[in-house]
Length: 384
Ligand SMILES: Cc1cc2nc3c(=O)[nH]c(=O)nc-3n(C[C@H](O)[C@H](O)[C@H](O)COP(=O)(O)OP(=O)(O)OC[C@H]3O[C@@H](n4cnc5c(N)ncnc54)[C@H](O)[C@@H]3O)c2cc1C
Image (cartoon, rainbow, N blue to C red; front, side, top):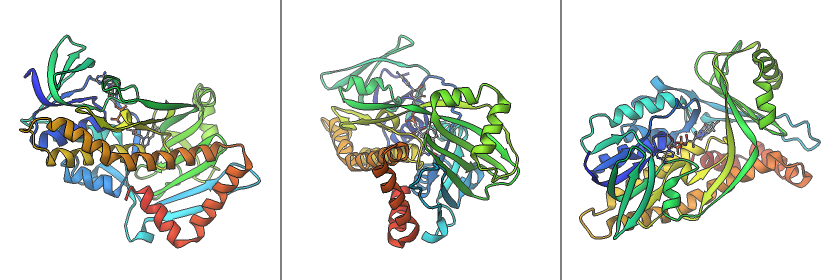
């Protein structure tokens, strides 16, 4: 391995893999510092623009072979509150599309991204963690967990919520940790979802069934951590809860995988790039998984960074500072808007206060009945 690289990408999640491929394809010598990690058991609903980016960047071929199309989204207010929202259905055909996007298993996406990286002569991978990073005389000096050292011109943090790159670059963040967590597992339904994602809104968070092909569904259940831990202690207890929470709408439900629980928080940064360091994915933003925004936003980070790298002149003095500056400026609006949208949606859903509940109900009435508002909401949800 060379001990100097133009771009070092830290973190081997989906966003890190996509970034490493983008930097290498843009012609930069790239080192991907990606420790071996447990299989990512999450699934991701990715909207049309994200899927288009993955195809254009060579990360996936045909989404049909890898994922399941999402044709409708149904929201059911199951809060039992006096001010309830109406049941609302969004259909991709309203905007002239066959599907809003596709639902993918993160593990399958990861394999496809790794295949896209294989054989790229600009790209090396090191299965190590980043131990420390400091910038001396305009160059990043990196120390790795396996004892290796190297220098890099541009440092990319794709190292998740606890990002070491963010700390090394001195970028400040705010994080609000929730009492809620998300339980995920695969389910087999007696009656399949037929392309429809169904979100039941409960007072402690949504309970969402996402189509995963045939009668298979991916469950994302948000509730208080202790409720979820208690629910999954006994498999039979979990199944009877899932049947009840899905309103018995899909016949008998059975588990098709073990369940996994993820803690939830709302994380934002002051700026996503400066001093020749940039942050992509959850190192820069994290939300509860409602409205399917997290990885979609992460892939928009990668697309933006890709554009900044393609516009850069790597022979010029200070090119990496310029990339970080332009990336930081380009990402500001999207990160602020998306963070405010998802944070607002989540807190209004959980809020015990009548004004917030009223606002949410009125909002959903508006989305149900006002075509222009529906179109705008759909465009926003799709990241357009
Ligand atoms: C239950 C759930 C459901 C979701 N559903 C959706 C959805 O439907 N649609 C959507 O768009 N988003 C969804 N998301 C969000 C999405 O999963 C995340 O936004 C995305 O996976 C984050 O990817 P990442 O690569 O930024 O971070 P991560 O996947 O957290 O990867 C970070 C990587 O950095 C590595 N790392 C950490 N520290 C170091 C270090 N010091 N050195 C080297 N490597 C390091 C870690 O090992 C890890 O591999 C969901 C999230 C959850 C929790």
